[in-house]
Image 1 (spheres, one colour):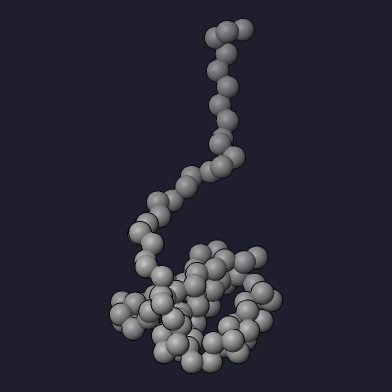
Image 2 (cartoon, one colour):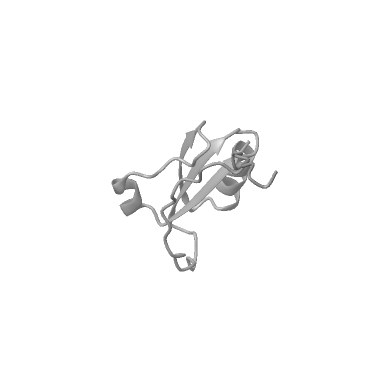
Length: 92
């Protein structure tokens, strides 16, 4: 019985590599800054959040990209140059 070999699949699956980067310093103020929302998944949480952020920080320029994939939408090189901060989120 000791010679029997069992094979099974790992339920975690294969994890893809993720590009990491260090945390950026905190902004001293949001006034006059451009904050980008990169959202994917269901919108039932993000729509009210976006409305609230715009109401509470009217002097901030809010931009957004939304996708229905399980990953946040990546910014283009031009968007990265013109954005002061990013809020990335995934919701289902």
